[in-house]
Length: 523
Image (tube, rainbow, N blue to C red):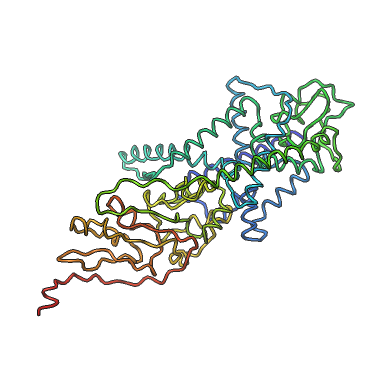
């Protein structure tokens, strides 16, 4: 019993450490951790580690292998130890007990159709090149959305309030941070999923992990063959129900003295409460309970039924139009129509990014200029909430490559700063008919002033006016010109490159005063 108590306390300690570290990663606007530390913290997150291993083969990104080995040995310990969403649910349960709402669990029948349908749908869409279900339901990525969309704005507000108070005392330890841009659709999705997770946790324990989460269902399949399993000893178990009342997965049937180990999350609560040592954690050697054999017979029918609905869903998704209708324009002005959204630096190309980004929003939280924002229809519906470069919100800092260093999946690859400075995310397009120099004959030049490579240069227009000219060979698509442009519709915007290119080295451009035609041509 003492060994089991130590095992449980160790699990709780490790899960809290991971919860706090991952939480801090998503609210840290100072980027306190190096990329090596960030990658170390996220090493055990299964889906990001698996995707990154596919892109960058190597031991340093093989955390998913370690998790698989643990699952084959001890069952779904990932769900109770390394998963931040799982740890968050445990914290909810703990505090609900502290405020007097102690929940007594009881055995519930497994929701095979729902859990396997979601898993099959996720795999089915992945085979067809869509990562949509993973984006929406992967536990690490979902937890990231909770913190990035819901907690981070509050944290910024508290920081700014404290910074203001300290400033009055002439203490400048903190500084105010402005939250630029905000995706309310992503906020709505996050608040909906948070309410769902909280409700299921308080009512039914880890029901979310055993019905909705595809990662939990996947580990449940593997845990059927785990070497060590939790079982009820038929000789010493008295069917008192104490272990079942503490089982957050509601997978212990004390009447039949069976444990549905595919739903067991490895919290070890049952091992520490049994008064008669009737709950054992012992070697199974792949033996199957009769109950599990019946479950396996039903899986085939469940999968076949969902293949039909998945195909219908996929066809329906592909038929949805992703373009928004244009706005009414003033006479003579041209509408801005972007064919391709701009993906972050290091994403190589749009296809690579879409197939590997789980929309965890870590890069969104870490971006110092807040140019990275969750997408809606920019990538199509299968790329929902994947980060895009939103130049309405901000621009990409020329000297920054934080997103390249912290991406846990390899959707955004690491780049040397000099390479990043020449990575062409897109090309600036100038629309003369929208520019106030042309329409109002008013001096401007905001786009050129903000261009770090001087790809946008002001050239003589007429009289004392100059007008922008774009040299796309040295343009890197950072969006500074688009962000600075004051006109509606925009006079200059960035058209994304589906495949990132390498720009030419920027050249120093000397400012040349416009010369009057009368002086230039005296004859």
